[in-house]
Every structure is written in C-alpha cells, then in structure tokens.
Image 1 (cartoon, rainbow over the protein chains, first blue to last red):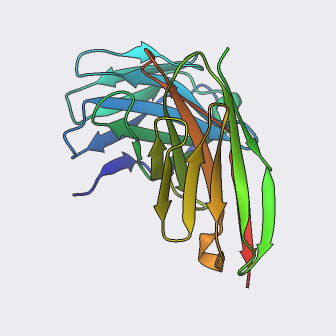
Image 2 (image 1 turned 180 degrees about the horizontal axis):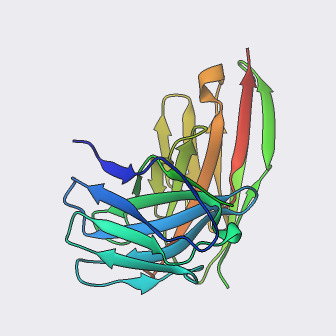
Amino acid sequence: NAGVTQTPKFQVLKTGQSMTLQCAQDMNHNSMYWYRQDPGMGLRLIYYSASEGTTDKGEVPNGYNVSRLNKREFSLRLESAAPSQTSVYFCASTILTGDEQFFGPGTRLTVL
Amino acid sequence: EDQVTQSPEALRLQEGESSSLNCSYTVSGLRGLFWYRQDPGKGPEFLFTLYSAGEEKEKERLKATLTKKESFLHITAPKPEDSATYLCAVQVTGSYIPTFGRGTSLIVHP
C-alpha cells in the first residue's frame, strides 16, 4: 500500500496562475482532508470530504476549491494564486471522520 | 471556541534526559485526543489516540496520558532519533474535523 500520495512535491507559481494539487489514497478510507501548514500557525483545515460525494469548508477555504473525484481521489484547486497561499499543503484521510488521520508527504508551494 | 494549546513550543534535551510535553484543551465535549509525530519535510505520522480521562498508551519510549483538561506525552530516556515536532489534535463530539495545536519541536542532543 502506498498510503496517501500527493503530486506535485514542489511547485512555484506566479501570482494569478492556477493549479491543482492531487491527492489519492489506497486504504479505502471514506473521509479526506486538505490542510495548509505555515510556520507558527500549525495545521489549518482548508476543506474536507466526509464521504464520497460531499465536501465542506474548513477554517481557511477562501481562494480554494476542491473536488472529490471518487472515493480514492481528492483534489485542491487554486484558481488565481496569491503570495499568501505560499505554504506546505497536506492531504490526509481517515476510515471515518473522528478517527486518526493518515497524511501524505506534502506539496511545497511558492507563489511569487 | 475550541482551543488546543501545546507547551513548550520548543524543547532541547540531552540523550537520556526524560521529560514531558503538554497539550491542554478547552472543548465542549471530547471525542478523542490524538498525538502525531512530524519529521522535517514530511507529513505527520499518527502515534496515539486517547478517549477518556485516565487512559494511558505506550509505544517504545513514549507514553501518552489524558486528564479532563490536558494530555501529556512523556518521553523516557530519549534518543536523538526522537527529535521531531509532536502535534496534538482534539476531536469534538459531533464534529467532523479535528483541531490541531501548534506543536512542540523536540531536539535531543547526543
């Protein structure tokens, strides 16, 4: 099992460009999450999907959109990147909401 | 508002010097408290889940305990490979999402 995989690992964007971060899990988990991690701020939830076909906003959703493509895949899209979105992005999954989370390796995004 | 506070922010230990990390929380109803370890440049890795006051769990040199207001992660005779950031998260009853603390950065010197 690969667990939770994320692509790309690194990305540099210019302000205003768009991109999609991909996440996939092979553990048959129902719930998936997108976080951002900034120095001194801890992990902050952007969006989550409690089950296939549902998505909900987290603490910091502005400037992002998500798609739960199927049970395995949960993507995060930045439509018009801003320097404030420079961060490390983590995808996570759980069997059910409320259980321990399994995290991917992260995507390091820089917006110039 | 649910709050999770970890202390200290950073901790430096000598190899073999035991210590504890603290996670205090103020939530309306605790469903579970989680501890994770995060190595530099990697995603967090699950360590423990605690559900009720008085519960304890152990793994190698780590032992996690829970009271009604806080959790401790005790590290006994730490080794340099225990150096990492340790994150605490709480799950509130009826909520789909956990609240994470900001973490404690632990460095163990040989």
